Length: 285
Image (cartoon, rainbow, N blue to C red; front, side, top):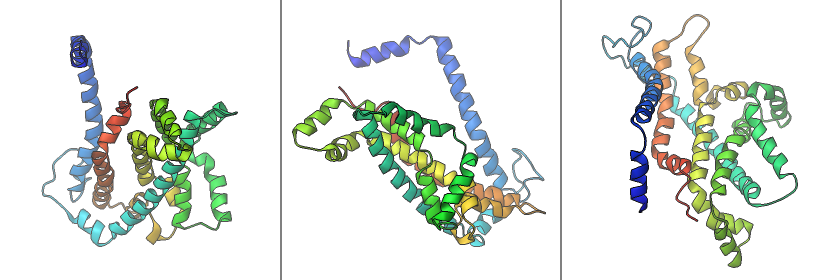
């Protein structure tokens, strides 16, 4: 029986109740994901979001919040800071993690299990628990209030998630390909560059996009390390709309819409890599 027939048979074998339950779960996930975005978009078009709260349509479309975000706050400056910091930190972390994951996935050495445990354990350490040691390190390196400090922090953040994604993708690559490369005279580095990286690119790109989204939306370290307004990242921009006496909700919601657009566009562009990584790629034995 061909693969297409087997696939068709397996799809038909799903019971009607299971299919309905699956559709209900997907519909619920879609609603939970879209409702806040729709609410935010509608609120950003209201002159006073508190006067017409919820999903009430605005009496007239009010775009002053979007205009002031670009005209008065110079939001593109913050976009540039976020792109620079997130981009460099992702490049450093992905190159570092992809090579270390290759070593752990393909080589045998003493303490290998301990390395895995230590890397995965970082997933359970909250950022607030690292505040003092990281803050002290940044001061000792004389990097406080610099973009380099944030790049250093972001490069070392989220290691466990990226390591998990990339290592699992390496595990699906047949070892025969590496052995063939070794026969041709390739070392470990050449094997990774010429053989492993092209095949594992979907997994590596998935880890890179996830790291970029995390760095783009990060607020805690950005507000703690940076003081100079000209160096702030996009999430730190939102704090300028709130004062001790007043909150500009129209400007705040408009800025939030502008801020979430780049991650959405990034995911749309690289969505095929997510699909390939989640399905294990197209590697065959």
